[in-house]
Amino acid sequence: MVDAITIRRDGGLAFNDAPASIEQISDYVRMDAQMTPQPFVTIDFDKGTDCATINLVRDTVARNFGCTAEGHCLQGPRPEWATR
Image (tube, rainbow, N blue to C red):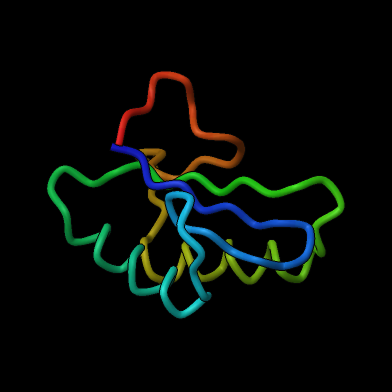
């Protein structure tokens, strides 16, 4: 399973294609961290997106999901092999 976070150039956020706030994303990835097996979490953003917004999302995911050595966090578009 892969959960995808998207950051638009205008700063808008989405979780699995549904609009979401940073607080909602925090809650979602905290729930993901409790799942067995844990899903992969991807973060993708539009070219030209503000770096501060990207870093806020990365920090939120790292703090609430705990991107570990197992490689459960990916940056870039959802991999072709990924299913929801």
